[in-house]
Amino acid sequence: MKSKEFAVVVLAAGKGKRMGLKKQKACIPVDGKPMIVHVLNAVLPLNPAHVVIVVGYDAETLRDTVRAHSTHTIKFVHQKEQLGTGHALLHALSPLSDFHGDIIVLYGDTPLISTGTIKNLINKHQRKGAVVTTLTAELRNPFGYGRIKRDKDGYVASIIEEKDATEEEQKIQEINSGIYCFRADNLWDALRLITNNNAQGEYYLTDVIAILAENGEKIHSIAAPNSREIIGINTNEQLEEARKILGEKNRRHVGQTENIF
Image (cartoon, rainbow, N blue to C red; front, side, top):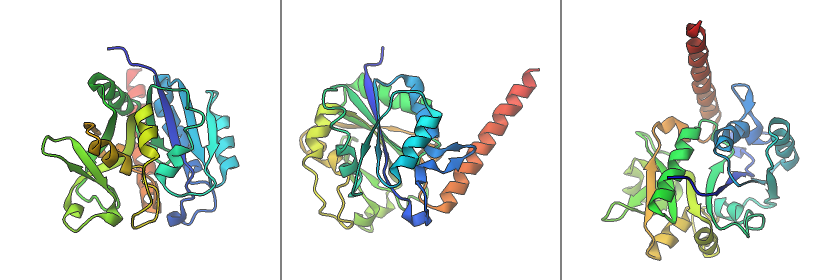
């Protein structure tokens, strides 16, 4: 089946305060390239119709970094106040108001995500005619991630953020990667309904899932083939892990190339 047109929104407005950073987190180099460049390199080969990046903290640095590494047409929108992922994504409505296809949502601090995984997400979403498909993963230690709750038929019913999860919900090992494929019109309608009535006082993008499920929509999912792909860089330890993984991957690639001769 031929893939239908899709757009990409990359959320990259965060400051990285947990890492004590003085510069834009998504611009930190991992194996020689800024994190956000790894993300763009994973999705641009799939030829998205539009690419929108939501910027916020140190926005000019991020814009300059992207422009220095990519000749692709990319639109930037500015989130002045960081009030949560749902609030950030709503900023992309303006440049995509006339787009009615599917929208892939990615994060600027997930440098390990692969083209193959994004392609599989889009393919399943479009093959099923889904309103939303979320990328999940199983983790032995799911601390810090939103947990996937399923209904009796196995579809995603809701995503519970760590800080709002009960003790029982925190035992769930299937986690939300934060990477989704949405049908555009359904996404914008649901985003307008979310509130900030939660432990962090933020507008969670994850609340869109529960809203769509309550409206009778089936929430599809696909598991990442390797849970390392969905690592978001929120600590210096995660940054070092990502650098190690990409370094090992590139050394294997070089070794395979050398063996050809």
